[in-house]
Image 1 (cartoon, rainbow, N blue to C red):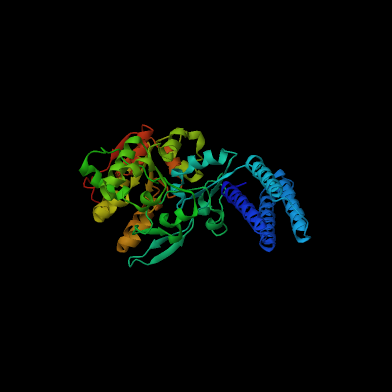
Image 2: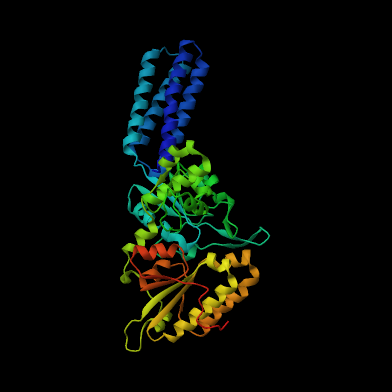
Length: 453
């Protein structure tokens, strides 16, 4: 039985004790009508609880048997009262109390308590920030874990909602997906909800539906848990200027509204605490000390555990990866970030073309795996729509000339496991590459080897 349902039913049964006290008071005052009405209410409550148990656990539980015995006792007392038979109030009360104790004991000990945990990812490419947590929950026989991908919308330049996206079909095949349209959060009230979207209404590029904002979700669970979809370079938590730069990652609705926040390290926990204290005041330090945990990022946990045997290389990629003699080329993951592109779009477009030209010259020994940020298109179209055509032209040029692998899939981990080195912009990928001791080179957009457009 789901933990929340059991709690509700136990609370209902607990109310019967007060009802018994009321029955005794009515009988002592000679108010038979009120006593009879209260008895019937007790019976209806017991029947309703029994029906819920049958629905959840199937028929034949000892808890329902105890409830049936209670209803039989209620019926006997009811007949005594309406037939005018004399009864000793104290004995009647003891019988009711004994029967209620039996019900409570049976329900407490015989009904299995299953915790319901819901995961609400929105982008499949960010699922790795929750995946290892889900796997542990899914393997626990005392947990019912549900993955419920939620839709998100592009935000138009004028601030209105644009195209809706739903990526439920893009999750790994071993992840059973539940439709957000078929799951009622309010009715089910899961014990825990995990999210990786921190922004609520503060993202200028995309947004989940307002129903799934953290400030709303907290109403439908006992515990809302936020794990960032990104990992960050470690920062000195006592350097105020560094903390100012971190506020854009920390001072976010989910950090404020979640009951628990899990970050990548104990050091990053201190960064979050100091940032939130700067934002909300020193009087809230103890609150954030308790809320924020530095137990590690699932993204790092997953990538550290993976090997080449865990990934399936698409057939169309193999022509870029293997030499004619069957040996494997070195694979360089090329990452272009949103921040770097928006900082100087014209220069970045030149740099991207230049990188292509350089790697073409070394194509015999090195395979380039280009992986633009998964929100690149949505961001450009929202903030700088006039630039998308040129960026798209770079993609077309790259594909048409078969310069290397173009990876716009949701599976970031496959690319990281396959790659021998990283080249590109500063981003959270750098932190992941460091975690697996991958060589890293950060590109300088101002350095162009050939001016070809």
